[in-house]
Amino acid sequence: MRYYKKKEEIDKRKAAMQPIGDSIKALIKAYRLEGKLSEVHITESWAKIMGKPIAMKTQELYFRDHKLFVRLTSAPLKHELNMSKSKVIELLNREVGNEAVLDVVFL
Image 1: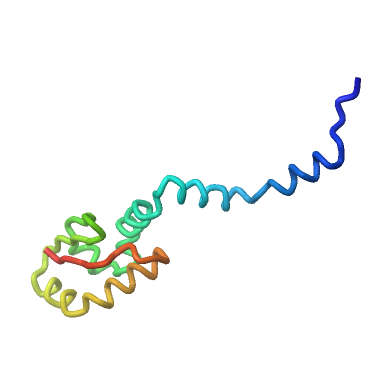
Image 2: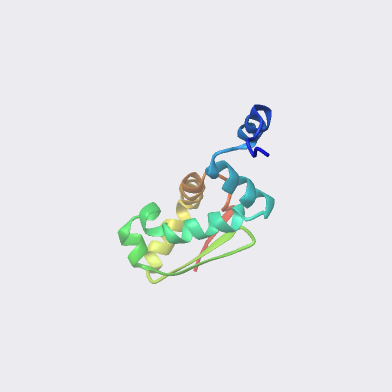
């Protein structure tokens, strides 16, 4: 008895193969984790996105219903960021590549 696979079986299996990155993306999409991963990515890269001076004056970041809440220690900075809220939202969404943030609330 031989245990060699037929050429058709090998070709069929190769056609069903896909890169591991694509498999992981499909798994994340199937479990609907894209939004949560985007939120985590934004909170982890806040200093890189907004810069070190703003990150140093940030006390807390958290998400609720696609809104990012940012607690700041500086009132003038809070006012300045409120004035440029649309630009902040654009920067954050560009970082993750989708519409993860619909609004930003500075506390």
